[in-house]
Image (tube, rainbow, N blue to C red; front, top):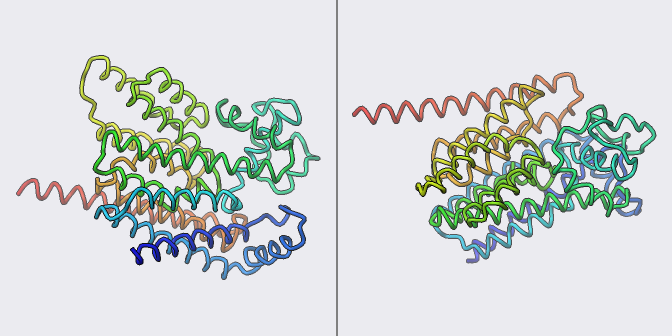
Length: 393
């Protein structure tokens, strides 16, 4: 028990380190608070992030490495049935609370989410027809990216975010944290649903499935630090599955459609829900393992399509990982998921080392992505060749 407490303490200390490190990436044009003590600390952390980039990179790589080691350790304990839900629940909640107050270190998308809602609440216009660039005097433009783009998401995301913008009264910091809290609650809700769904259909693996999702460093960073809207989207698709299992069909379909309306990616698994409905009405047994494997494969198509449309972004993988969480014992899913997690987070190494404006940045990212993809292809090729070889013997 003492060793486990030490493990948890060190893990949470790493989460605190990630929280502190996130503020090294605060945009130089942004001041989060005018409190003098905070400003001194912020400038010190910004100095590390922007003017001591080799040191910043070493810190990031160290935090990433430790998080991956802890992830593997918790997975091992879960496989050996040496974890209790009460302990895991506390760790997940504390992690979410700490990182809900972090800075969105590796992405500027959160600022775009805030401004999209602001177009409605402050400028009384529709973000589908107006971009941030249409309001050149707005102070947020000084630290935003992609100011030329129109609102690219579904109406559900506005339903969730416009009230937050109203509550924040267009004051940046309160609104910023309201958006972060939405991501944190969505993360906690998704963790809860992974556990509850698994308890219904994979009871022997419910804790392993939860650990696979909740402790994954990519899920943590993209959901809690960068606060991408993928995690609310995931929450509602998982809620749809849970409600279906609970025989609450109408609410299940509402949640399903609402998820698609947040970010259209979950639309790829919509046909599977039609099949589930058919199986249920015809009293056929549902093979949930096949459902999640198929859903996982379909979700990968959204990563491919988004990459072709723009470029690959690490947070695209959070949706597939949320589905892989129900079948982590499948070796051909677990190992590629782990490889993808490591290399997706490695994409941020050139970001913190040279910034995305640097001349060699695109090439560095492409090399990391290519190596990661090649590693997955090689593993899958060897895995299935091995299966084929032994099946012949």
